[in-house]
Length: 290
Image (tube, rainbow, N blue to C red; front, side, top):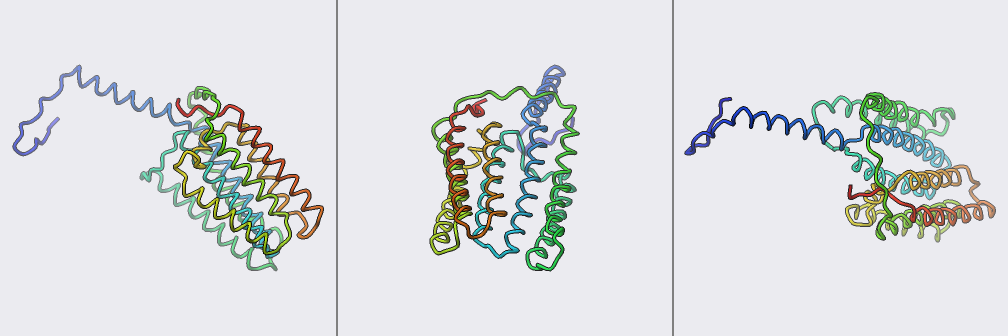
């Protein structure tokens, strides 16, 4: 191996054959450790779940905007932003690396085109209320087929990977437990406000909740940040969020705009969400020290 020495310094002594072999063995060991740290199955499933969540959000948002309910659209927006932050923590704990390598560019360009096409159709659905009803579901279907299909491809590619060892469980520390309860409190309050009648009080409360969630997202690297909370969650916590978000979407999209019964159901559902998250916060989470 030819080497160019630093000006004014002599050339380094080439390593012996044994030392060179140890270097090569260590390089292979580093590659093997990296492969064990990246859980491609978990990342593929997370990709599919994210595609489903995005598709449901686009359809629900379009249905709400067609009846010009801006307050309800804000409720769904901030619930979706919370999930995005939580999912980013789950991706990072599974070894996802945000690198723009040359091999990723076709995937990035293809995903970008799918998202742009979905957003263009989404704009038509919002502004043109004379379109057929089935058009409302096309943006969500595009996202589900494009991004979810990529997740399925990744899942197939990871089928031959060795099984990852089961993550160690540990009771969540107080900060993460408090953060989990705060997530439930935010979703519960959003559920309650989604069923409240229009008025100044609802708008003010929504603004306050929106500002709080925005500050929470900005403080993502703190102990109470949403990515850190998502990284510590296991399937019971994710299931609790899925149930709560589903109730929020159903009550916000399909509930009557002004009804005392709807307000009562929203209040009960919001309280149930908070109780559910308080309960799951005491369940073991993922040990982040492993």
